[in-house]
Length: 153
Image (cartoon, rainbow, N blue to C red):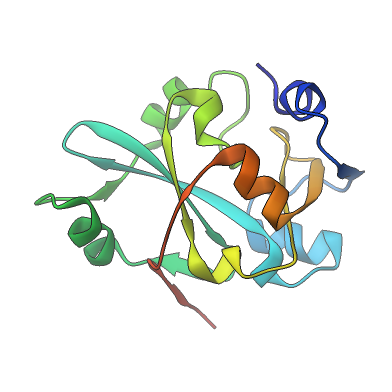
């Protein structure tokens, strides 16, 4: 199911905007004129042959060691582009929306992002952004909220 269909089915309130094609979350923040702290960047990790979606601010990076401890596993690594293509057949790599449940993935949301009033994220294309109230996102995506990122310069 496409993201916008899902949002409409759940009678969500959101705004969509179109921008020049972007290929990183920080580029989207610049195009949308919002802080990188408000842009939800989905990153896919793999732990013991299971994939998880981690949603964090665009200007942050994942601490894989922290996620390893949260999951109680020996190894956590980033998914490869090939694995991403298999997991998200309906959108180009790098344009995945942060709703892991639409793709059968458990979603983790970083506490830094959960504290924001609103978030902005890719809608499944490199040209369309969705802005939504963070609490509504949490209600729909039902992520586990954990602290697993650190801010980059």
